[in-house]
Length: 374
Image (cartoon, rainbow, N blue to C red; front, top):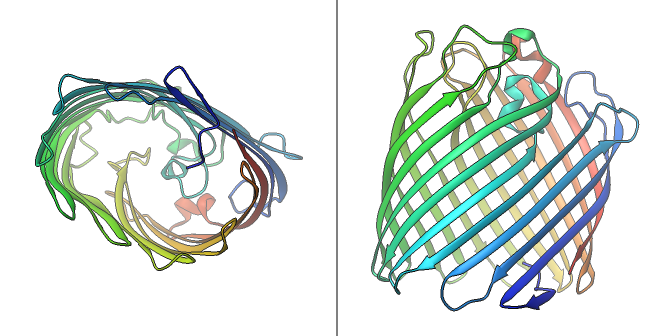
């Protein structure tokens, strides 16, 4: 985290601007393999209170990506959040949040399996959490409502797979756990309800669903080793007779180790479930494994590199896909608040059926950008 550039009236302000140019040999991420340059601009700003009691924070984010020659390859996303915490006592507090978050659909994004390779996802979230923590035991009750919509500029796959993913999600989560000398552990669970809205192209399926989940989680830190584990079993029951019940397990395991002042390493294993538009399918399972190494030859220079493997399973169908990605980042902090950053990436995605042929691609890209914080 960069240091605060401004402090005024009980608030600290964090601001970050990034601008750069990316070269890619497959800007559409499809078999056409058209190359182009893409201009990238990102702005992030945050104001966070430094009060001893209670808390308030506001954030703002904007991302713009635009190809130089291929005019239809352009996207921008706007985000903003307001959150606060009210402390009733040293052990009991109430958290409230309103979030409007925009993200650009890209490679390794589950939404690509809906036939969307150019566009944005907009998520509006309202959440409230009542938290009790006496430093030995803790109990959290979280209520969340999300309104999720997708704005797609280009659809590159068959019409049979174009369907609105605009939906509303409701979930309630109760978590209880205990603090330990090495970290904390908890159990959690609650119901989930999803309601879909209309589309210009509707498949003959009512994808509304209800379900629930129960799981366990732990976070730990011992010396230079940190990590977390979170595993949950879930069940989702769809109104459509063509979609079978989905009963499965998902989870995340992360590990990071600081070897010394120059070297560090990390690893992640993850299995997630996302909604798709594939007919007769309840969703998409993504199985991910990744490792990375960090090398810091000097205080103002670092290099990070690592491969990631993803295996996709479209639930209820024989369709599968897998991708390999190698990412590398090098950065030089030429000034306390100015950083020169270089990113390189190579990806290859393979599918097991011609139905997904538009999603089979290989791509290499390189990005150079300047990051300024104030």
